[in-house]
Length: 205
Image (cartoon, rainbow, N blue to C red; front, side, top):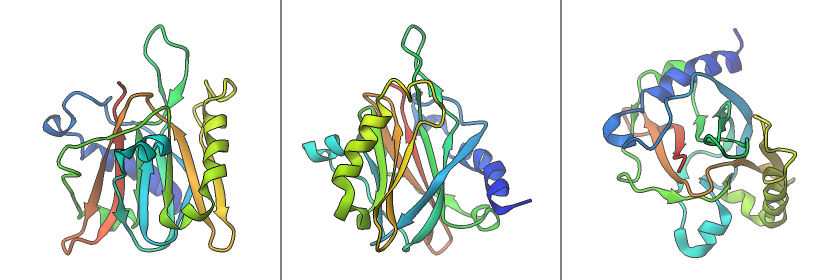
């Protein structure tokens, strides 16, 4: 079994280990039964964040996670349709970035996140490292136009991936999310507090 297939099979159960009533508060759908590889995130300058840029610029700030520079796979749930009576639009509410393989992840513990504080999102969100900031503005505009277009509305793989700094390979992966959602970020930690995975959960409201 290839490494990607092994992680795709391992990830749903591992993600589900974070689902707990006292943390979720009824905001989230059941854990995903299936995840899909959405591409690789090239991390440059260590800081990783998943935000809706407009909300970040409005002063909402951003949760940041510091991981070693490198290239890491990104897995998302297969797509969550909007509620009954709304236009069929698929959106991502689970984003998982393993920094290590299943064997190491089995012995990790989850962080408590940001003390149950959520960060506001709006319609779409961008995953990128600090190194992508040098060329992100036009790429974010293109991603927003693509993700909110009618063409991508009913596709379950309606996300984008663009290299914004050819010199380093830093890229931006962008996804449709709930229009008034909140994202909560968690880290899977080793015994010596090394970050071995990132998990972002977004509510559907």
